[in-house]
Image 1 (cartoon, rainbow, N blue to C red):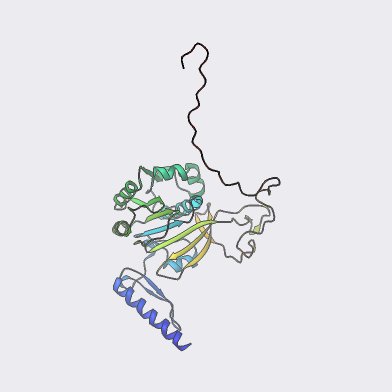
Image 2 (image 1 turned 180 degrees about the horizontal axis):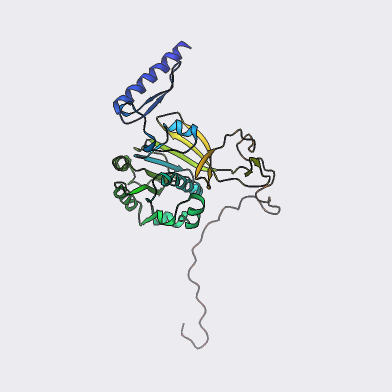
Length: 319
């Protein structure tokens, strides 16, 4: 027991020294018998004007008051089918940002091939669910990932924008550590956040101090006057994992987006509308089970190439 405490104290001392040397990198240290220590550049935590507060106390505390504005932030989607949830989470962050910085615009950059597969933000949905007017969101469609990265690097230096969003799929070779460091530096100089969305990508070393992993979460039950409405569907929910953060160990949150108030709510796994797995207790099946066929489609067979069919020449015609 004593050796374990000594080892932990040694680790905390090393982390303090690393934070002191790096200067700009924050560190949250929870040593045995001590209060939580926050190490910041010049010893001061960021002001409320320098962060995007999510409104969820537990998440904001883990982030050190909120998501820093003058920084690069990664948002990962494990599968391409989660692109809608990942995009919705970033749009919610943009909505929180535009509430404090009105009359500004968000630039959303992506490659044309990805937009063709995952789709573009819908103007009516932007206004209805996130309170973002269509003219507040600018879309830049680049032919290749390298072009999209170049646009993001140039736009990240513009102080007129509220935020820059770069959405890429996979692990393009142009997006290396040096490229992310340039994005992070330009975001710090402009004082505006850059959100790097990586859909269906393997994790790799980047200069972003924060990384979220986002996937869709089952919606809870809609509540009317504080009481659950049976058979209803609640607000959209996101399963957000904070897996890269020097302020706290990895943590997972179930966030619900309130479109009317434009704020997040925290739904704990012990919520009475959810079962032990965190899913709502709804006995109704989403899709009727198949009766005369297997659950999954059979695998595709081999593909054969056939020659072009030629009609036989009619009598009296030259073949």
